[in-house]
Image 1 (tube, helix red, strand yellow):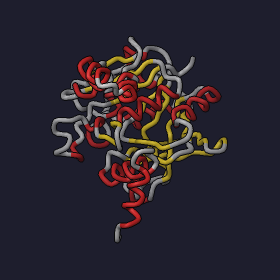
Image 2: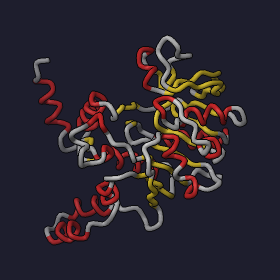
Image 3: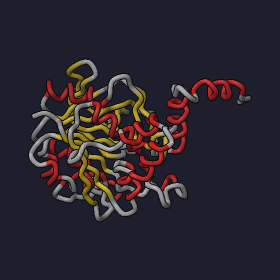
Length: 288
């Protein structure tokens, strides 16, 4: 079966960006002129995804409104002849029936958020995209992964190498390289201490899963941080099915981190047709 559905877990509180996220979802933080979640949605749609599933929590109405029509705004832009802006705003609204919202009632971790979408996904493979991981690439990373899924027909996760001292921030993998850039995973551990990490190869926020993962997530077993970790469910799935780590072409920015978020803004702004030139001139004039 083709990968046609994608889950976006967006119920997090964004405490690392307080007070900015006190009244605004962290996924709505803008990189240049688009919120993080829009980059993730655009990546999914460009990769052939047909149904977008948002797992939301309290206080996420701004996110839902962003992907809905705004008749007053659109009418104002139309009357003022701002046709280009009008097309931009109208393009944010997916086709009817292609976007679904479901609620994660308790903040029990990423694994739990994915499990909350089980009835919408049904018995077919699906993708998971974390908006915090913004990836700048010529070809959408999810599209690169779907190409590999069509060949391997197995669950997979995007991977990067991280500094050894940062392994306690990621799910860490080990395994054997079977193709160029493709690792068949033999074991995974969630957020190990640097001295305990089996490698420095980390899983980041792009996944493709077979529906069997829901059975293990449904056991509601807690792991690191007292949360239901998707890494633990993947370890259990490994006993039955192969899972692959997929290297990708592109640059990943950790926008759940303040430094990573600012790096993303600079990188995307420098390529923006309106502000790239003036910004580059300003940066070159700074005495760092």
